[in-house]
Length: 104
Image (cartoon, rainbow, N blue to C red; front, side, top):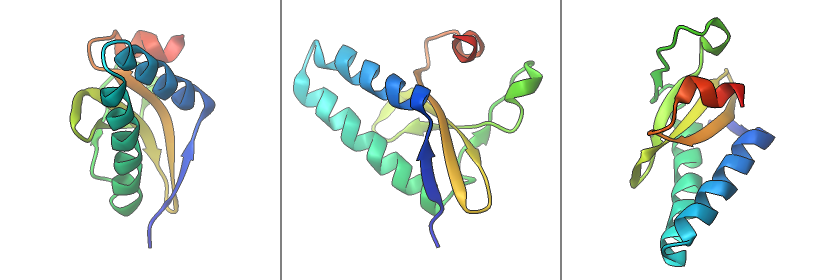
């Protein structure tokens, strides 16, 4: 049975902002990015522990897992895997200061 996906508001904002940024160069790539996030959600719902634990020195981020957005390897999906639920916390470009992005 697939886990339910719950996308936090900050993660939704991240996805929209990334798509808008990508779309400035090519709207079709932005559309593919949105499709890829949906595909990644579906994969995580089926295999919640496929991502690796996010290594950080920030104690409040312990337990967060990270997985690359399908077909967009520079974009990372941060999530918490629970028994029947996947909580998508953030979706960020890998070049960012990731720990600092969680404080934003």
